[in-house]
Length: 66
Image 1 (cartoon, one colour):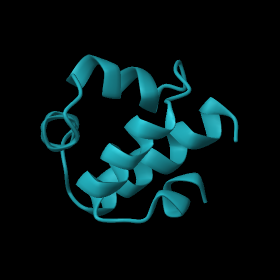
Image 2: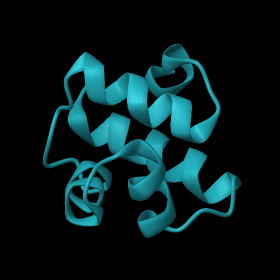
Image 3: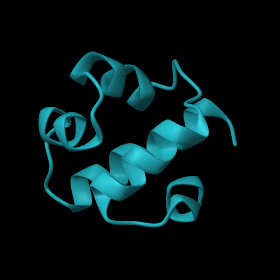
């Protein structure tokens, strides 16, 4: 999956849960700046970060990659 496609998916899932970037970043244990870069498609996160983001969003990793 391209970083741009992942970015759109991540942002959509975060907004569906009415979460701010700050809230999701804290729950996932990443900085808000890093999360922002993910949502802009500037990073391709490693599997360990995908797992943290998925857990914070309450979704399986496969839904993040959907």
